[in-house]
Image (cartoon, rainbow, N blue to C red; front, side, top):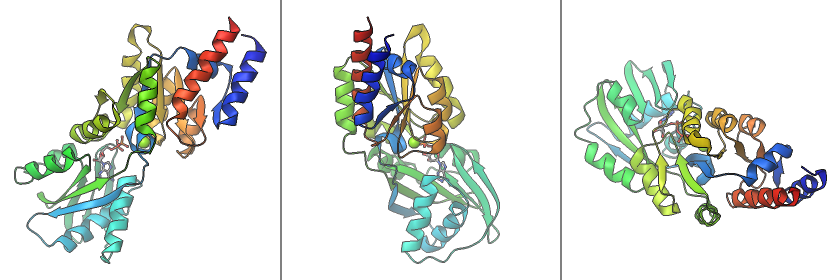
Length: 291
Ligand code: ADP
Ligand code: MG
C-alpha cells in the first residue's frame, strides 16, 4: 500500500465528512460485497413519533397513563416517543415499580397495582396475552410501515400504539447507488417483519432480516460473511456495536451513539446514507492506485 494513495483517499473522504480511521478501513472499503444497514436511526431518522393509538376496551387516557409510567423508566427511543406523546395529551405521570427492561422486546412494570407490559408481539405473547381481538388491526398498522407497540394490562391486550419513523431523505438513493456498484444491500432490524418489509420496499431493499435480537446482530453478520463475502455494517446504536465490530467494515452514523462511533472503522459525520457508496468509491479508487 502506498502511503500517498492512502493519504489521498483519506483526504478525499475527510472533505465530505467520511472519516476512515486507518488504512485498513480504506482497503476494506474497496472489497465490500454486502452492505448491511440497520433500520432505525440509520435508514430512518431515528425520531419516532406516535401516530396512532387504538385502545381496546378500557379508557384510552388511563391505558396511556399506565404505559407512559413504564416507558418513562426505559431508555429506548420508542419509549421516549410514547412518553412525549402522553405529555402532549396532558396525561398525568404515574410511578412504575418492579421495572424490567427486556432488550429487543420491551419492558414490564407494576403501576398502581396493575401489571403492565409494553413491547413487541413476542413480549406480549410471552406474557400469555390473548391477541386474537387485535391481530387484524396490528397487521394493518404494521403494513403501513409503522412500528406497532402492544400494551397489556393485567394480562389483557389494552392498546396498540403505532409509531412512525420517517426514512432519511437520501436512503433510497443510497440503496440504488450501492446496487449500481454491484453491492448487495440488506436491512437488519429488531423490528417486526411486516413493518421492516414495508420500509425496505419503499427504499428498494430486497433482503430484510427482521426480528433480530440485539445480541444476535453480530452472529447475523458472521453468517453473511460465510464463503468469504466481505460485509460492511452501517449502524448508529449501542445495539449495533458488536455487529460493527464483527463486520469487515464497521460504519457508524455520525449522529449515532458514542459506542457505535468508537467501534466503527469509518464514521459518516453528515449522517447521510449517500456517503456509504461514496466511501466505497473512495476505497476502490485508493486500492486501484496502490496496484
Ligand atoms: P431496533 O433494532 O429497531 O432498534 P430493538 O431491537 O431495540 O429495535 O427492539 C425491537 C422491538 O422491540 C422494537 O421494534 C419494539 O417493537 C420492541 N421494543 C423494544 N423496547 C421497547 C420499549 N421500551 N417499548 C416498546 N417497545 C419496545
Ligand atoms: Mg438503530
